[in-house]
Length: 212
Image (cartoon, rainbow, N blue to C red; front, side, top):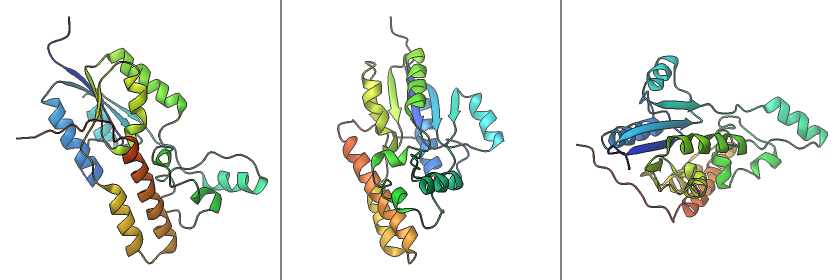
């Protein structure tokens, strides 16, 4: 028979603690709301909080999967030698200034939102964790995590997305406002990537929670 207390797997690109920036704050509030509904197991994908919060989260059924770091020198060597290279993601190259044209050309797709934290091997490890937990529901926080939805649905587990910001419009407006051409190009690519991610996730139901 099904367990009386629902088990929920919550997958988020933002650590739920500390609540010191917008994405983490949004993830934190949804985490708290879900915890009032059932037993929540959290996977933080691509964000590493400070040590104190890491220890606290590990005691709260949370696993942290760190991000890949931008290897500018290794990328430059590969480009100079004409060798294949691992395409950086948007969050890897934040603040990197002007980028090689080959890199910029690959930043406008939805997969650019998760290259720093998801690859085929890690996706399979996430699916193994979901299988082992056998949850009643999987909640994806942020449109970037929508890439996992088809894989989780294939396991026969219901999946919904959490409330999200209209990031495509936000980054498009930031691209128009900045005087720095490199920053403007990054924001334009981010807006296009989020726009594609939203379209991919359009078939998913949105979880609406109300916290008293």
